[in-house]
Length: 322
Image 1 (cartoon, rainbow, N blue to C red):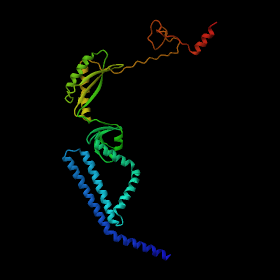
Image 2 (image 1 turned 30 degrees about the horizontal axis):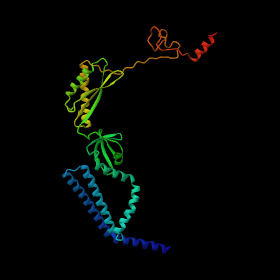
Image 3 (image 1 turned 90 degrees about the vertical axis):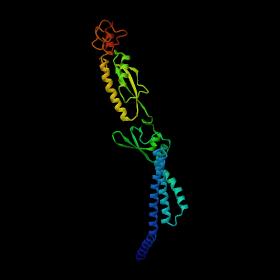
Image 4 (image 1 turned 135 degrees about the vertical axis):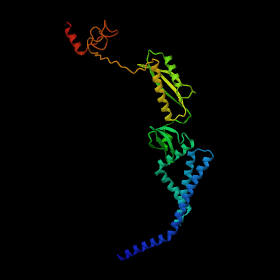
């Protein structure tokens, strides 16, 4: 019993002496890590400033600055490990990285996929920071394109974090990709109204909206002969193509169109429905002089209508026949 205790105490003492002997190396390793971390921050800032002065894209500067910072930080950790553990050589570290890279690739497959997608997004630039996009049911302004995900601020001031892999593989609508944008709205007029007059009134009204571009010119097209109205599609262009400007312009256009059309006696009909209750099993079906519902009461039968007896009626007719 005493022999085992003495061996355990001796082992603990050896570990303590080894730790005390390694403290200088640990301190030096921590200092090296701090130096490399500070250098990584400086390099990231320099890369961003250099790219900004040369007119490159801000999002690309952020990407390469982050990659350079991460590479220097990892290098500092590896150097610190060789200092703390003298038995660890650069060759053993690189072999460890080779074997561990495969394991890390399988364990962090989604993270690496998002990383690669983020790099491709920043290189191909389908959208930029500040653009307004729609993706997977979310719509808002791109605030940041990070290595793993893209941050979007919605119009009601909420943040949506979208993985870069989803952005790279799914359909993305960029509302601000071009310097101007076309808006449209369908206006229904009555069947008894003059279509040419309605078009003229609409175009004259659009001329009074200052936020609408004159090139391309607004246009009005007949798009549908609906159940209760003739639908005219009003189309106009705005600049810039931001959502706020689109909503403000549409609000002004619809307000003025309603007042102008009504002032010129042009009807804005609403849908109407007529419901007829028609029991097709009655013996009087198709006979306008006898039927109770469905068709207006009148003289004569409905053209093409005929009486199809029910089973009970057929049985009654068969019994009455001699």
